[in-house]
Image (cartoon, rainbow, N blue to C red):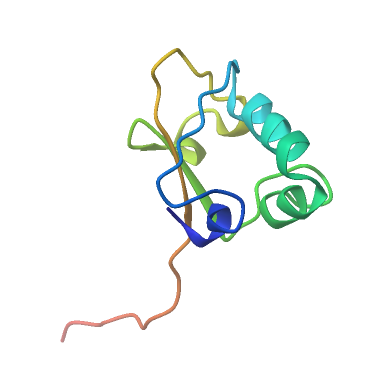
Length: 92
């Protein structure tokens, strides 16, 4: 469970929704959990915020079709915070 969803779900809770795409999924979650969820995950244009990463069956949606990534029955969607920071290492 990530901090993005932890405030909305119990730690052992799973959601089973009938949706056709990531966009549809986020819209349904926004309806269920309200504007606070939507604003935490999506920007004012409806795009995924830069600090939120979504995976469908282990594949980052940003490397496929983004919010238009199609979902099939049984797909597993993970929402994680993006990891950033650190330093660039140079070899001599």
